[in-house]
Image (cartoon, rainbow, N blue to C red):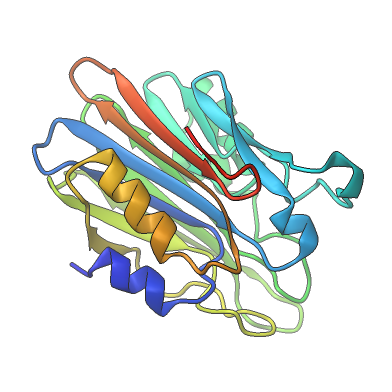
Length: 237
């Protein structure tokens, strides 16, 4: 397993990131999602609660220029599943789950984001709240001038206590930034939610970090605790 803190500090611009795992006592499932931004439009966002999940909204509505790729619901709950993504595919995945379809079927017609020349990867995850098992997905361009979509799916049937897996969109702040490559990285999960939230937030590059969501869900009682940090609001909930 990699040291999560070092992994974040070594990458100036991981972009958007998803972490799924389980606490060391095996009692709680763990999920985290963060967003970063380089453009003013990407930085002009905050996380806010929406039902049991969250959504993004513009911090300053007057300066929002294009909501299509920045305003969405990153976290939703469908049946006994938690869905976390970096885009509007959240809603599509939930619709498929409600209809009894699987994760792969839900993303079979989706591709990377249409933000040429970056072609931001779509990262997605679903977690079974009965046992904490989870799957992660990466949809990214193949690097050609007229790119095809490469679709990768990673299943973790037995969530190991104290361990998580981290997937993100970019391998740095290049122009354009390179997409994530390889498998989700195995990382150590701190024991409590505040340790995890503090570690992620303080390790993200100060110039680019925007918002962070972290949740612990008791796998027996389903009780959950949440932390939300927004740079623009200078707030922590």
